[in-house]
Image (cartoon, rainbow, N blue to C red; front, top):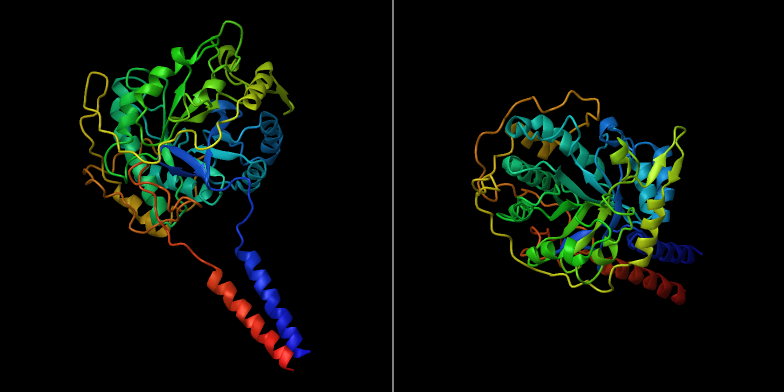
Amino acid sequence: MKTTAALTAAIGATTAFAGAIAPRQTKTPPVAVRGNAFFAGSKRFYIRGVDYQPGGASEAADPLADTTICRRDIAEFKRLNINTVRVYTIDNSKDHTECMNELADAGIYLALDINTPKYSIRRDKPGPSYNSVYLQNVFATIDEFHKYDNTLLFFSGNELINDIPTSNTAPYVKAVTRDIKQYMGNRGYRTIPVGYSAADIDDNRIEAAHYFNCGSDDARSDFFAFNDYSWCDPSTFEEAYKEKVDALADYSIPIFLSEFGCVETQSGRKFGEIPSLYSDKMTPVYSGGLVYEYTKEGDAKQQKYGLIDVKSKGSAEESPDFNLLAEAFAANQPPSGDGGYKPSGQASECPAQSSTWDVENNDLLEMPPKARAFFENGAGEGVGLEGTGSQEVGAESTNTASAGSGAPTRTGTASSGSAEETSSEGAASGLRVPSFSVAPVVCGLVVLASSLLGGAVLL
């Protein structure tokens, strides 16, 4: 009886261990960058989603910290059949576990802006607003969201460059991108893509794309996104997109539309750009996009963008555009296979200073010295949306960083399925991690069970 009990225990241990190490089934496996595309495991990932900030920029509320709001809206997201939402502002002092888990259960990822109205780089004062107080808040946001598999990516900046003169803010955004990547690496976090969301301006969009993809890997973006309202129904691929696709045909990191959905149309939005966006005309270069925006906000013109009208008692009423978008997504699935992506490529050449691009060279400021302590100790508690702000703290960094100095001194973990397939010539270098094989352990348990079985037979 003792032998039988031991045998049962050994077999039970084998089964339990195998169960413990089996891959967790999830609708939102971590997404990684390979070449100029996103991948979830071995499958190419296309962003199909909406920009989501109930209350708008003026109220700066966090929809992912309120389960009543997020549950109401997740039901609508399912009707749209989307896989991503972009949130512009969150409260990093609050817990987001319930809403993030419910998004994951619905198969939905989060594209998150790491800035808030009080903690961000200012266009008119980029130098003084780049400081350790600002970075502490950024890193606290990373601390809160890195743990969720369905955190898709982080935006290090949004539309900071909105004309020719403000192109001089680009080095500060690039420094923040570098700092976030270095922080995640030194804290041992999963490698989550970091990049910039550019404004819908023709003057220097292409220069910005190449600037954020040039230089050393530690500071290069993992993707480039831009807000694009050039397709106004009725339109065509040739009129709205072909020139941009051709200009970025050799771009080596993922591109997607962080906002789209023109309302300056003859007879309302038809979302005619969606068939092109997910066709083989664009998927070799683009990885989808996000429709602006989920809720009606602001003045009468702004409200035209809203897909949902939130009533005074909190109920959600779908607009005609909502149903048109749901139909467009349903009728236009991404192509099968890899969509013609480029598995490898070269970093861009840094654009020269010009009449439209006011960046002298590729030099970046060193990270503010006080911020380096966060690598070892963590950022600490987030200040949320009620903090006093960081924009007037003043400059703390005056020295130029040497190229490559932002590389982590420790190594984070690569996203699942990406470690052996990320090309250092495409996206900024992915981190490689040794594979872990459970076979020796399982075999050991099998041997143990077999030995006990043999003993039982001998008895």
